[in-house]
Length: 263
Image (tube, rainbow, N blue to C red; front, side, top):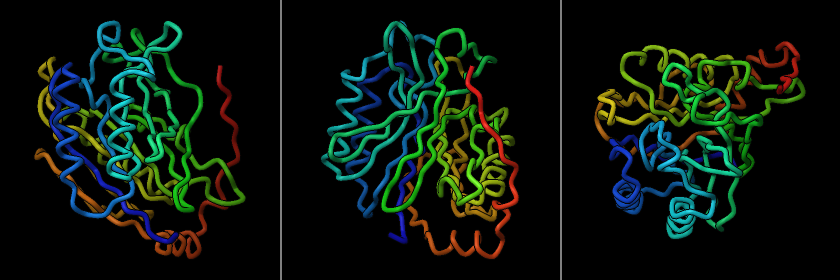
């Protein structure tokens, strides 16, 4: 109950080629030798950050969700990342949290990246997903959500609402300073672990992604950081260490109470 082991996959992606990406990721996942409980993939791991949902979207019964279920079951892990989903005529940048027993939860990206016209192609979500694993609570968010601290903020003054904050991303090099800074900020202000998984390489729009995937502890100290290269990294997080920080420095008790109103 005390420890949680997660694996971050920082990888290049084949542009808008689902078959190639799934084959590549399956090979990487099945080759992981370390014991792990959660494997985290980047944002839109099957296509890259594409604004062509009309051509690339699948349903929740489609090949990529089936693939997630098969890999999670075969590897006996929780597998998560986001992909393009169509539902009732709307398109979503949807993070799927796939359990090894085939059950799943999902989170639809709340903050759509208008600078790249994501808001013109996708529908925003309106609720968070906080998953539970071995007594750990995990808040699951996507890329641009990182810039909006209220959406990630711990919302309970009785006890911290979650222990680990996960961001899956396609975050480009030209704004990577914000990525690194805000991952640490979210960890410090929420007194939680933060794991940010970004891709590497260039996409079909010639946008370069430098990775810079990170794991940060509750005091903002970086426990893992990788630049530019593809990498698969497994780390064990300790609940005792987190509880010690929260007990010695119970800043979370003094946070402002608030309510998010979805319109």
